[in-house]
Amino acid sequence: MRIGLFLNNLDEEYQRSVYSGVRAQTEELGVDLICIQSESVNTDSLFISLDFIGVDGVLILSSVLMTKGGFQESSDTRARLHRFLENIPAVSIGEELSSTSTGSPRNYPSIVVKNEESMKSLMDHLILVHGCRKFLYVGGPASHMDNAVREAVFKASVEAYGGTYRIINGGFHTASGRDIIRDYINNNKDDPPDAIIAANDNMALGVLEVIREKKSEYEEAGKQWGRCAVTGFDDISLASMDAAALTTVRQPLHEMGREAVRMLKNVIEKKEVKPLVVIESEVKIRNSCGCVGYVNDKRHETLLSEAQNNFMYLENYMQNVSYLGQRLITAGSISEIIPNLQYFLTSVNVSVFYFFLYPEFIPNPGDNGLLLYQRAHNADTFYEKALNVRFYDFFHTIASDAAEPPHAWSLYHLRSGAEYLGLIVYEAVGGGGVNRTSYTHSCAARLCSSPIRLSGLKILNTRKSTRGSLKKKWRFAPRILWRRTKNLRKRRNAASL
Image (tube, rainbow, N blue to C red):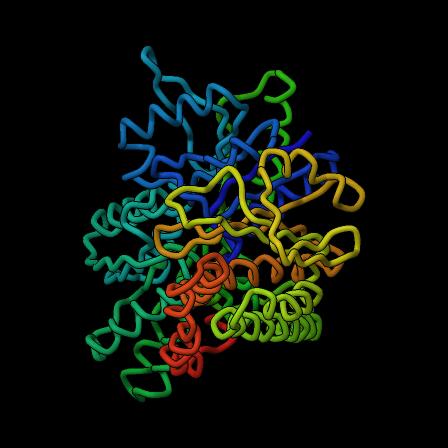
């Protein structure tokens, strides 16, 4: 049995946490897994890779793939989604999934976390225990369903107690939290809120980072900001570290992934499945809200050792990402990249890897591609003359190129703007531990999602596939691109790659 998991990318902890549960459960059940990343779903290319990956059923991480403007409101997309779900067993993770055919509505198996009550309990704690009345909500995308629910509960709670609030929306990542709060503090230095409610933990960690920075910079005003309560949502692993001690709402993401696999297996085997499974969330009170006394269950020495090891792995991996990324920008041909790619794959623990480019760059994923390089059967092969491979045939025979089953492959679409350039398929061995496997996915995501690096790759492919005057035209393009991004690379650090 083989199942697919559709999500955005594994470059942030929410999605990696769900993925880790999915992967753990598929390994226990002996089921192969293909994780499909960066595939657009709110366009005509709705899960288009299903045409060739050869799965028996799919998991859809709908909490990150679906927005108010996507499946929920577009009748055309709803109709296509319904036709899609009619033809393959599917389970939705994070959002209750329903669709409509020419007749009545139909619900599909979904697993969701009950967030409203926990969010209300968190707000009640801030208002009733800490006396907060003035709030700042640092939100995720306004169109995102999870953000919409949390924001609605936030507003209702503040209004019920006669408080005041301001809402600023951004993205569900640490840099967005940093940018929002830095701008807010610069414009409201002497007027801090009582509490800052972040839409997720990543944003909350960014907020805490800036507040601690400004606390030393602004003296008296900084002390006022230092007294602000800060809360998050999700309870990612960093939230419980003593340095953050973040008050948050725990979503059992790993458990959601596991349960989703069990549900999908039953759907595939035509067993009875509940249309909706609801998992409870819970408030985790730590120190960032103003409470005191929280200490992580693990010994300080153990935490410090883990943090040092994680930093060492991350720094090493990111250095390799940076170096390979520069080779993508500055190399004169794809063959010049391969030795660096081989070293990179070894350093991030990848045992199976395939690198495809499309003959031409296209608006949607293609049915076939040019295989330029592969790592399989403990051997590396670079094809001077690229092999034209039909993806349907490739994915139906890929198991013979890997180690003992079950397998956990990842498919990552290479995109530059609206164009699809190609794709990579890889299998990350988990022998280095959960953290190292997570870093493998982070490296792949950061390398393959960089528009600058992929623009360099696009130039190389153009040079490889054209002749005459066009080849001369692109001759110095990589060097020009390198010059234009020289200052950007100087500013780049391991955390922002």
